[in-house]
Image 1 (cartoon, one colour):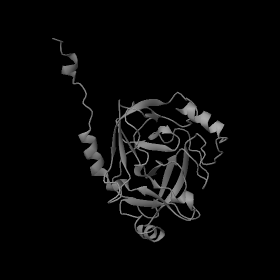
Image 2 (tube, helix red, strand yellow):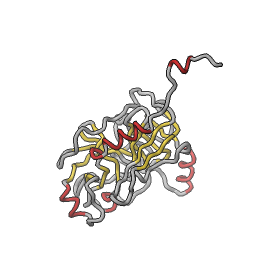
Image 3 (spheres, one colour):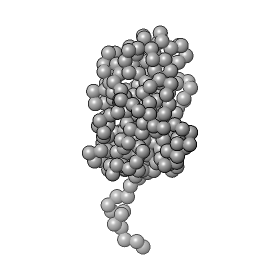
Image 4 (tube, one colour):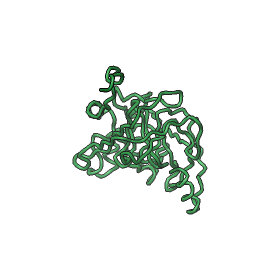
Length: 251
């Protein structure tokens, strides 16, 4: 898939972009690439990934790549695992949600390069500084990619500012806005991950900061979804053989 993507970009004349906001390699061991540089997610458990509604992969057709930094080649740190269950939060339109849970076909092996990120124990606070990471571009109106994981630093924007910035049919309470004029607020990865104080607080919903640098970008407010995430993880828990059944003699 990655080789095909590189060939297609070459044919289109879309050379990888230079970008000064490259993350320290492997400093985000929870970041997952979902078979394309424009969609990623966050590992929250050895079986589970959180991503956006738009980035929902196809079961048993998509490979999740863990332990990545430069997706242009193999670094020896990767784990490539097939996606099994894909659970989109519904209803999508009323009220609006944008969240997908992805179960891996086999558990991730935790290493120095592959680690889960904790779910939030609280909601983000206005003015709090958070980190957003993903593969894509941090330059508005440029949709190429560097191939390397990028990081930007964003402030959380208060709800009142979000409501005033966007039409009332766009902003709901299950969103959190981050980034504003004169700050970083653009990363074109449609599943970019926002972490505040070591906790997963958002995945990208609307990349408005890439369309208008004066606008914040909107993320799913993960603190509002803890109960739903835990419920889905319990309901779709993989059935593994017990030691007794695994060693039982065949009749």
